[in-house]
Image (tube, rainbow, N blue to C red; front, side, top):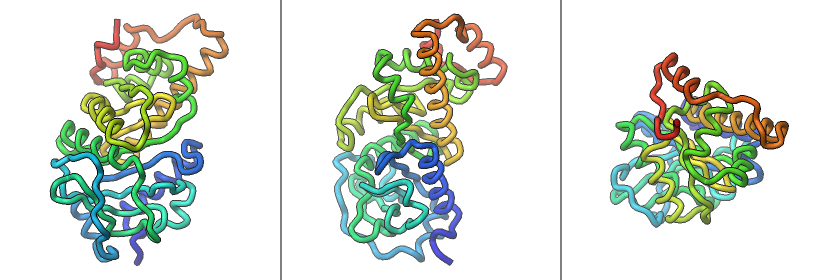
Length: 274
């Protein structure tokens, strides 16, 4: 038996491959982290290779101190994860203060967790608190159509949420709370980590202007599905705007959105409706 035979590791690798096949991970773009359950840690523990040195993150989240995370590696390509997991992904342990990590498996030959691990970690802290521990996945990708929207629309949660909700009928059902928007910031540091985590107190997804999308969820299917739905809606929006030269004959109106929410038993974020 290998660590890649353990279900959670196998499912994690599959999500990396799914994202690559969607075209969301050019070169070493994007990253994925998963907060492991205690029983998953124990299943993987026989394969731990001995802890590495502690590395400070530049952010502190005491609420998840001592937890373990599956993470993609810095500079690693999603397309290579399934081919060579040990060199492209790893498991890291968080210290007792919640401000440093160390590698306990994988990320072989001197590799490190994704450079955006501080953003992931702070978002894990926020989403775990907001969902009573239910959310365990943070996923960052570079979906092209959504990125294109950030060059056209005002960078506000209202403008993006309404555009996406009105582009595909399932959107208000999949993300009834809407999406947040982070203005362009240098990736990988504490500033963007804190800015994103503030938005994720309210939203399951946050747009990074001219960069990509952060999504959160309780499991891989839900989180991947959220990313997929938002990017599909963005593609429809771009196509409709292009075909109509910026003018639409009709759309899903606010009362239609409310009717969808009533039918499917979800509560829309009313601040995004007229």
